[in-house]
Image (tube, rainbow, N blue to C red; front, side, top):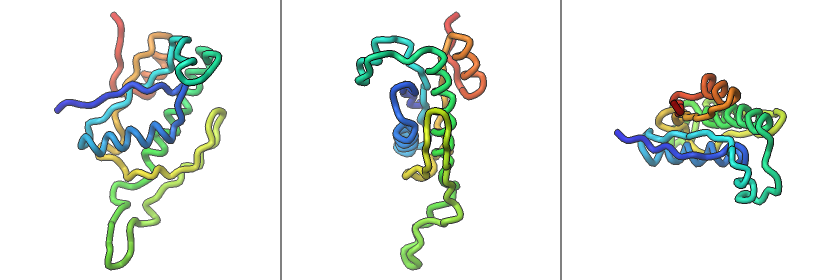
Length: 150
C-alpha cells in the first residue's frame, strides 16, 4: 500500500489547520497519510507567506517542537470509539470520549478539540529531514521516518 506524505512547514502555518488537514487526509486515504514536518530553511519562503523576515533557526525549531506537540494533542482529541451516531437516542458522540487539549505555550494557545474524528492510524506518520543538530534532535524525538543525506 502506498502512503501519502505531504510536506508542510511548522514555521508559517497554524497547528489546528495542519492537524485538521492531515487527519482529513488520513480518513480519505484509509489510514495512509504522513506529514513531512519542515521548518522552512529557505529565507525566501517568508515572502510566500506574507512575512518580511525569515524566522531564525533556533526559533524555527523551538516553534516546530511546540507545533508538533499541539498537532499531536489535537489528533488525540477523540477516543477511537467516541462517535456512536445513535439517531434514536440522539447521541452523536460520547462526551467522556472527548479530550480538550487546553495548550498554552510560548508560541501557541490552542484549546481544541479538533473537529475531525480520530483518524484511522490514530495519528498520521511523522517524517522529518532536518540536517542540523536541532533537526536531527527533533527527528530522533518525534519522527517515525527520517530522511538523511549520506
